[in-house]
Length: 260
Image: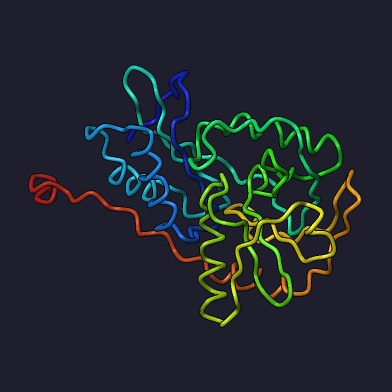
């Protein structure tokens, strides 16, 4: 791995996670999702995505706040790359609006190909006073936000979109549902429309912000429910950070070791 100018090529697969002073969350899950995305994108055996991910972890700074992204870039000769990006502004809550226009995603279950289109849609939401858009299916069912998994609470149950919807498998959401299972909290997949979420505690969850309760629904008739559970879960998410693997230190050669 060496510094290089990224080629002008489409992003076939990608993954990103938050790093704060050498600590990160769920890197095994991000590795598994990235490797699956590379396979789905048709990465050949000549690309060692697993070994590359290990090298990427070793190269990350151990001080400061970062939001690195690993990528598989297409073209005549696909390449793997690491973008070392400073951490953008993070927030503890979200204003969510609804997008009823055409779905810009071409590959909703694989992170990478739709990053630019979703970023553009998110910028549009911010221009209208929201932090993100809730995407819906052609028949009006809520699926996910442009950059986060949708979860909500209803009747004491933690709810998630029904199986089969075109959504990205969320790493943070997987941790939340696993923790809920350990705590004995019922999990309920449900088909809902945005109106069904009105008045409930709704969360947007992802690797950058963790858990953000929805506190407003701009340009909709919906109301945000009280975020009664969010603070406890946000603390648990904060506590889930673990030190990155220690960087590998090259061993000196026998000749170097013998020098006085």
